[in-house]
Each structure stands twice: as C-alpha cells, then as structure tokens.
Length: 393
Image (tube, rainbow, N blue to C red):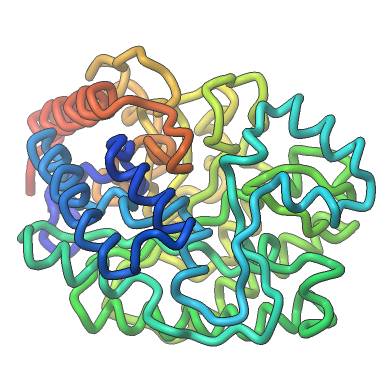
C-alpha cells in the first residue's frame, strides 16, 4: 500500500474541472455585482457536485472540487481578502513599462487579455474569510474519498499581486507583501489540516518562467503576472523555495505538494514554455514538501532521467495525460511512463495525475468534461494494471 492507506499508484487530479455554461454565467453576474456571494455559492454547489461525481465515476481516488467556485486557480482570493482588486490583463496595460512589448507578448502567447484576471494588492491585505475551508467543508459532506485542496503558492501570489504603481504604495517591495502572503497561507493550511484535508497542493507554475523565458528581468505573461522576476534566476528560485518553507515550517498531519507546469491557458502547445526540470531540481529539493506534482505527458517537459541524481527524494505526482489535447492517452502509454519513473522512484512514491487542470481559467477551459472524464478513466485503468503487476500491498 502507498502511504496513509492509499493503494499503490493513487489516481488524483491537479485541481480544476471545466465549468458548465450556467456556472460561467453566474460567475459573470457575480463579478458584475448582480449576484451576492451566497447566491453564487448556491449555484456553484451544483457544479461542484457534478465535478465530484465525474471524478468518482472515472475512478479518481483523491478528489478535488474542480475549483468550480474560482475564476481561476489564484484570482479567487479577491473574494477572501481585503486590500485586493481584481484586474483583467487588459486593465493592467497601463502599468506595464513597455506597453507595445507587453501587447506583443500577449499575442504571441495566445493570451485572452479580457478573459484572464489577476488579483492585485492595492492596500494592506487581510483575511476576510478562509481561502478554501468552505470548499473542503462542502466536499466532505458529499464524499468519503480523500480530498485535495489546491492553493496558490506564496511565490505565485506575491508575483501576481505586487504591481509597481499600485502595490508599492502600501508594500514598498515584494518581500514586504510576501510576509503577509506567507502568514495567510500558513494559517490556511493549518485550518485545512484540522478540518480533514488529505492533501494541500501549492501551485507555483510561474517558476518555469524564471528559467525558461529569457530575459528573466523582462515583464512577460505567466499567470497574468506583471511583476518582474529578479535579474538573477538562482536568487529568485532560492527566494521562492524559502517562501514555501516559511509557509510549511513545522506543519504535520497533511500531505503537502508543490505543482509546477509550463502554462495551461491555451491548447497551442507552441505558445507554452519548454524545458526539462533540470534547472529546477535544486529548488525542488530545497522545498520541504512531501510531493512534487509535475507534468510529464508532453515532450515540452523533458525526460524523467533528470531525476537520476535525486532519486527517491520525494513523492512524485506524475503527469501522465495532457489536459490540452482531445486525444485520449491509452492505458499502455501511461503504464510505460510510470515504468520510466520507477527507475528513480519507488512504487509507493508515485501518484498519477493529469499534467495540469482541465479548466485552469474559467472562461478558457482547455478540455471538455467528456474528454477530461475519459482521460481520468484511462489513468485509473493504467493504475489497476500497475497494481496487478506490482501488487497492492
């Protein structure tokens, strides 16, 4: 058995599920002030139950709520925090140092400037309500399966929320903002643990931008971030790892993972970042988390051989299906990928998941519910085949 009573090769998700049209309409009304918070939550309850049932029927063993209540995987914090303003990428043009360059980047990367929104700190940030405790409590009333709760990581939140010309009036530097972000995330993880969450996943996809999209000091698009990374990639990565460790220091009783990918806002693979995990290995090893949740279903992510020098150091949430394609990866493909990973990880260390979410940004899902369901089914079939081969205990 894998840890905590799970079977070998547990099947899970990265987080998001495509939102139904009626939920998107409710989300638009909520942003326009035409629905109250509680009115929207009642509508979202139904969407969460549909996402949950799809996962259960597909055979997912560690479920999420599909992030149905969220506009995207990080901007939802606007509802939960004081001092934060929601801005579309288009609204952020005025704060870009080089507007023409920023527009060029958005076109090249196929970024829907009006559909993708980001939270920006415009005052001192304070918690109005827990970030995701309501999501966990609702899900626990409707499933007995272990629950994964994704949260935006501290580096991601700091990068997206700190915008020069807006945030620096209250937080002179990114580190000033990071201190409050770290405290809020740490308290949330403790709440989630105490309420019965099995897995908290910290999403840090923007780390790939630090090493794969030169020049590092330029303002580019990744998760709607305008805030520039530091000029030294290694210092930036070290700071990111430090923030994670400040969040999780001394936290026990819940599995904590970090998710890193190369972008999930478009089905145009050529618009997304490319490069293997080698430049990030020391950062991953420095993070005091139990699991690395990584994409490996796409050639853009490189080869598993990069783990040769750090074998068996952590659990691996192995990405085995690409959420951005309509092709359903056969179980044989997934099994072969897992067997590659077994050169560097023990069977009990490997969890199976998609590369990323199926609906990271509410208005731009990368898959239909039908495709997502079939991909999860294929993962479960592969897991069952692997269990027959490697045993269940």
